[in-house]
Amino acid sequence: MDNEFLMLFLEIGAIDLKGDDSKLEKLRLTAKDLAAVLRKAPAKTPSFTMVAADPHITATDLTVEEAMTALRKQWETVANAFSSRPVGILRAILLDAIVQAAREDDAIAVAFVNTARNVLAHSETSDEAEIWREAVSEIETKVDARAESEWATPETITVEALSYTPPAARSVTHQAPSVDRAALQAKIYSAAGPWGPTTPNPHQPSSPQPWALDFANKMSVAIAETVESVVGELAPAPADLSGPLSSLTKAVTLHVEKALASFSGATAGLQRRTNLLWWKEALYSPSYHASYLDLPVFEAAALMALDLHEQVPTYSPASVSAFLKEAIRCLPTEKDDEGNSGREAGALVSEARTVATMQPFRTLAAQYAPAPVGRGLLLSVIGHPLDQASFEGASLRALSGVDASTKMTPSEWGTFLFRELQTARATNSNAAKPSKKK
Image (cartoon, rainbow, N blue to C red):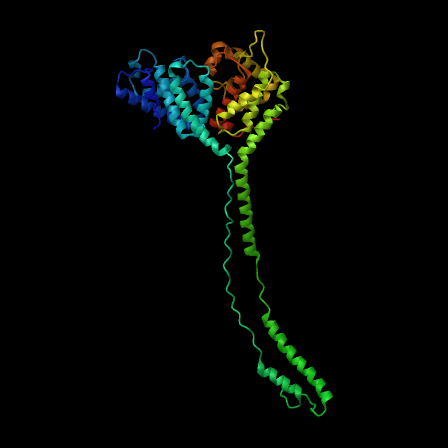
């Protein structure tokens, strides 16, 4: 049976309703309402997830306000029940709503899993860790099951038998021709002597040579005319085969197309894996047309996230993120004077917004994510013009859930961006068909 995550928060004491079942029912109805909102607007999945996973989210956050408005519809006196806005309860409601929606909508499931994997690495949710582990595990299993159909390579390929129904046989009435024996006899008799009824032979048998010659002439003509008339009646009527042959051609063409489609679909997963292995070994960026080894490591990591995103479908197994992490680890790591390979998120965002190398990434980020308003994807900050103060310190955290001072390694940075790209494509209609980049 599917877990009810509101109850899990109650069990660990994260929310306290004083044993009042009527209040619990109001929370359940609110979660149901917010799940419906999410199904209508999947693009809200990242902000819902980020707010639900952040114990320090401000009470004035736009998503918190939206959740509070939904709660008021079910519980009009909620403001009198708590001394301040019940952010903890609202976060629990949001998680329950997200899971409800993700169970029914695969796109929301993809966005939730990728966003949760990113934000949980930078959130202090130790008391709720087990609840989040269960939520992510359940939905990630669902996503992997969906991805299996696009990534699996079957052991055998089955092609359906040719479907063709020949046209029904046409019934042809045929009457065998017959020789007019009386007429033939009269002609032969006439050829034999002067007594015949039809152009008789004037010669008597007593003069054999002239008689025989005239007999032969008349006899040959008589038989030839008779045979030719019979043969003429035996001539077959012309048959029109264009219809049956056209139907057979269409059936064979359709059969071949289905066979090729079956083969293509069955080998797509294998071809994709082969291409990814080639990409990892080549370490060449198709978006920037240069080797990742020739770029600064953090810029290379971001472009690797972009290039991998464009090679894999929206519904991809969780192992793809791990694959990217290992691919980035193949790059030479830059270290500071103290031997650390990490850099602060604020500096990475600033760099991603300005350096020429990151232009392909900025173009796609602007297409995928709207300008930042409240808590949302880091893509919004990277892809849209903002003043410097918007991605420094508390401002960056308010917009993306990531503190500017948080340090990331190249593999963490690249994986973070890849998950955001997957999230945006899954839930944003503008991301359904990314533009081709030069």
